[in-house]
Length: 87
Image (cartoon, rainbow, N blue to C red; front, side):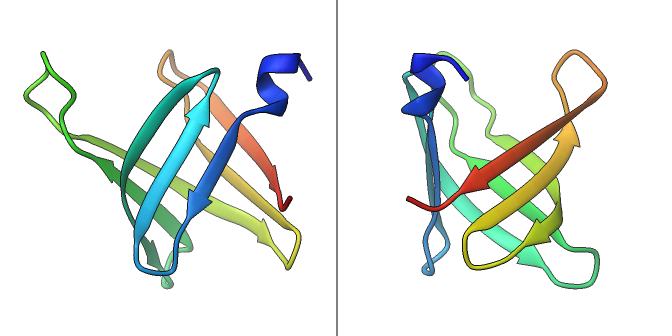
């Protein structure tokens, strides 16, 4: 894990708000959980000059009181796995 990655975070708030910091890039939006298929959908508002919101859907693979493991499609194809832990 790089020094930059140690400062990365994902916050899923109970009110549906979402915030992340990935390599110094802070993104905000809203999130929802689909209990039927264990998917978490994050929607971020458009960031100028773009006119389009960003929608990211990940599948919850594992969750407990200290860990959250998500899988989704990477931008360039393939699958990305996120291993998130509480601080």
